Length: 56
Image (tube, rainbow, N blue to C red; front, top):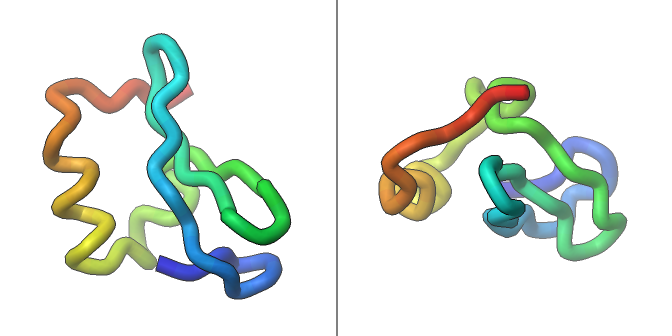
């Protein structure tokens, strides 16, 4: 999945009680609901590993 800001790859970032997606290029962080419509299959598979996603 690509960053909306700079088109670099997004990675899953686990922080205490929340999951975010962070750009490997510009380090912008996205909440899951911000990019939910853009999720690709690979990213969805990664997120399936987490039993609870907290939207804050």
